[in-house]
Image (cartoon, rainbow, N blue to C red; front, side):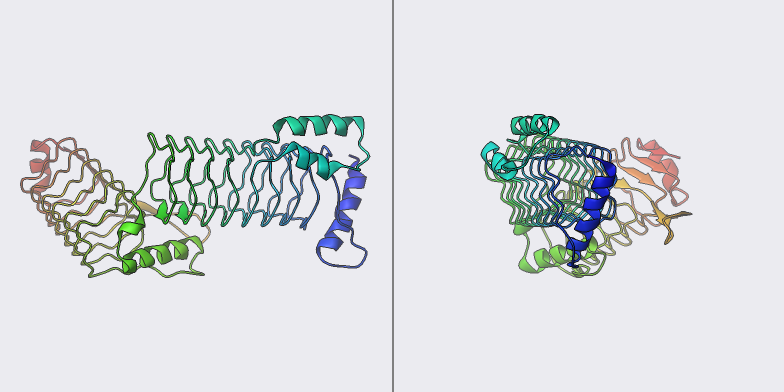
Length: 416
């Protein structure tokens, strides 16, 4: 398509999108627009049916209610784009970048040849566009999002039934009430994603990483989960705890605009099933967590001061920058758990050179199993290691009592 013609069409569409007189909705069906930059343009409702948009950039662009049926957006950049209500059926999004995009109610369902033919009927096609039409009809049966990036994207109520998301990165994405029945999510990254009321029935989730994902009223019926890391469902918690955790996750995702930080301090969560659950930043001070399972849980910046973890399972959990001052971990299992510092950044995202360390001072680790655990820069002053299994545990740059280092080394730990 001629560049000047495209610019004129987009200018008129801009007036149309803003509701101004003289505006005309752009109809660019089956055009090859590969490589063009559409950043931050008001393209709400634009018709791009079957277009070739390989490598195009739509950073911050408003594509809400747009018709992208059968488009090829391979390697396209849609960072922070708005695609609410867009028709994305049968499109190709291989390696496309949707980070922080809003795709609320987006339609990623399978396309149909008959539906596509109906959409382009009556259009005077060039030979090149006729070839493109035949090409689309050969691929439209699947919406292809293989290896796409949907980090922190808002996919609330999106229709993604049977979509191919193999290897896609959906970390921290909001999939509340999204429909993904029958989708291919093999080896996908769903870590810390919001899967509240999400339909994942009949999905292929083999090898998927779901650590820290919010599993609440999530439909996993008949899903294939071989090798997947699936956290416990919040359904197993009390109504109060479940509501608090859901509100906390919403608070994090919306940067404090909605939701409320979770305060579950002084609560009794004995025997709670919290494996793989994201508890980062919550207040769980003085809680009773006796016999609880927090294996693989994410506990970054979490407040656990004076909590009781007797005989709890914390294997593989991350306690980076957490506060465990005065906790009782007698007999707890902490195999492979990590206690690392977190870098402090300023308002401009620059490294301040400061590190927020994990606090474990005055902790009772009597008879705890700490095999293979990693402590980096942690404060462990006043901590009782009597009878603890510290085989292959590492203590790097930690603050320890004078007599603790030699005793730990003697019992199989590495102290640097």
